[in-house]
Length: 339
Image 1: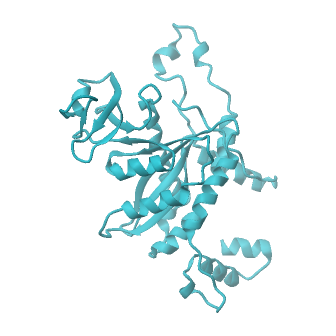
Image 2 (image 1 turned 135 degrees about the vertical axis):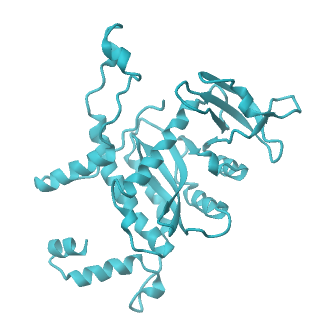
């Protein structure tokens, strides 16, 4: 990066390299008496608001996902990301040392506090998390933000129907694949939570989903939880399939958290460009095929799979414009309808 900037700005590589180092270091590690300290947490709300400014103004639906990723037994990163067209845009994160004793509750609460007022009124925000992160306090803090939790539960959980006192195992709700169930319940005999339990077992899946939300049964759909997998794709974009963060030599969590801001902004840039191009691809005409067409027997879903991710498409588009000396710009975010 220093070499590229020095060539473009006709400056000194060593000077630019030192300026970049000063940016990610703590104040005590910087040279000079006028160096400042800054917190990456102060950037989380503006980053989410930037995403919303690029969002389609006709759409007021947002899906956030929570998850953790590790790196080389050095870091664990707790991340909140906006899910968009098969990708994930990080908007808040906490970088922790791998193997540190203690609960993750404090860092998660700090991330939600940083984003609490970033989303304007009138937006419907869904927050997804896998069963390894479920906790009553997480369910409650999401609701305090004015958002809707959709948290996966472990199959060993229990539920109680309204007006009843007996708790039953949730795994008994679905006797086999191809079944769904939804209803108002109280989950867990100890530290119970009242909400809507969604149970879904797809025919091609080895195990069912059990999901807890605060939405009414007729307002929620278990298929929304399928979007959660996009945050895993986002972690791949940050590492081996994109920015190669797995090659970092950093060992200080505070420095790594600042570097993640660079990765987050870069991801927003390329995904906005790639997603805009993805939205302009010709629509599938599968629904127009005759009932006996061979594609109806071989294609299991009406939407064809995305062969090139929006991250990859955006990166290729930006590099192509640079090579061709074409102007490049930030794209817009055009979300797909919820399933």
